Length: 165
Length: 32
Image 1 (cartoon, rainbow over the protein chains, first blue to last red):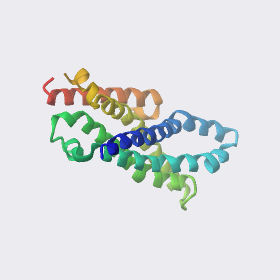
Image 2: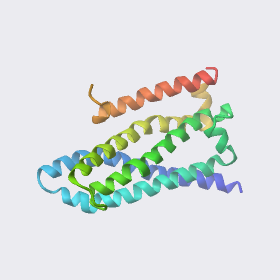
Image 3: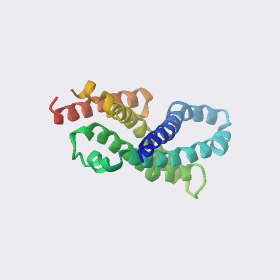
């Protein structure tokens, strides 16, 4: 049974790297690339071939990351999420930030991206609104990833004392 | 006021400020 947390940590890292890597791709690369591509009429290549594939891995690695993290917390899941034990305060904050980010992916980003990419029907007005909501949710997740990664790193027992005395 | 999330730098700086605020809160509750 001692293999379970070790394997869960491995999976949590791998899926997390892919999730946050794609989040940074959307925010640091694709957002500006889309503006340039729309200007020279080549945006269809991104919206048709790149974005749907990136979003597929993005939303499902978010799920895998969360469940691998929950498995890693194991019997301390509630200690972290409800701040019952001071040893889990830091990782608890990281876990909450990750949970909010997962919510944003599935409730705000993906349903609105489906409208933007034409996977579901939407009027031009609905698409414009969807663009703004998906953009701000994605930017919110980029912002939240900064403290989330700090608390995931700082929350690891080896480093806890350095930051929190 | 412009939304800081509209720019990448605004997003990063907001994330760093949020990190500091949360760090102070956690440190406070840990008695630091």
